[in-house]
Amino acid sequence: MEFRVLAVGDVVGNPGMDRIRRSLRYLKQKTKADFVIVNGENAAVIGMTPHQGEDIFDAGADCITMGNHTFAKRELCDYLDENNRVLRPANFAPQVPGRGWAVYETKFGDVAVIDLIGRCNMDYTPDNPFLQVEKILPQITAKYIFVEIHAEATSEKLAMGYMLDGRVSAVWGTHTHVPTADMQVLPKGTGYVTDLGMTGPKYSVIGIRPDLSVAKFRGDLHQRYQWADGPTKLDAVLFTIDTVTGKCLAVERVDLTDENPARR
Ligand SMILES: [Fe+2]
Ligand SMILES: [Fe+2]
Image (cartoon, rainbow, N blue to C red; front, top):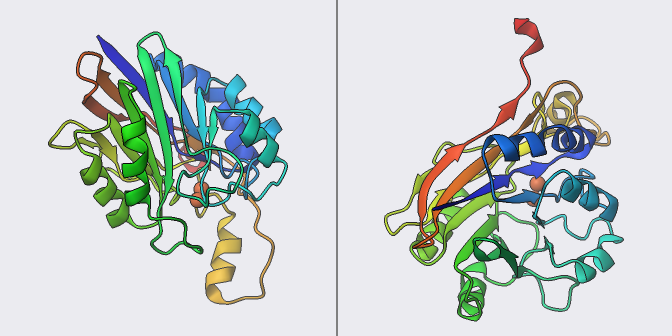
């Protein structure tokens, strides 16, 4: 038997939320996914509100992961403490609200999800995610373990994949909002992809209106960032897991994207 897990890239702004409401349940059915994990850290562009979290669950998510923007909306603090289906990075300082990993019951057996954040080119210094995950894994007896590494550097994410190869069912990256094409089963049976991508405006610079991003890189006077309008996309990766061994059998992209209006 197979256990199918759908991992969805960072949801960005109202366009991303609209796309999730419109498409997640459809994609879950189409891929026959048994468990859905969505990164929600950009639902409010910077952060996520509890209301948006509830909307993502209503759309079909079983677990929401966060990243460097976890605490941008302070009203999320209580929500994180009260709701074990929303995870913030496990290697944040231990005194901050919420939890970085949890175990969920499913009809296939227990599923553990661990959220980690990288340290390369990030604007703060959490605990070492490689050492932190080594402290967490011995506490978990779940048959299936999924690890998200929210990080900028592709090398940091790949290194995490290889360190955990054969010890967890799958490892994926988030944060760059740019989907990578390296879906693979690593040599010892762990599913892997460096970055899921994002859910939000298709024609954008990581979700933001291109003209605003171009202006920033040109050095123009700063304007407040705003998400882009127009067609949207949902970037997601499906991991098929063997229910006997807990190892990954297949990793595939199952992205949804609106048509380019110029081609109509
Ligand atoms: Fe991020
Ligand atoms: Fe993000």
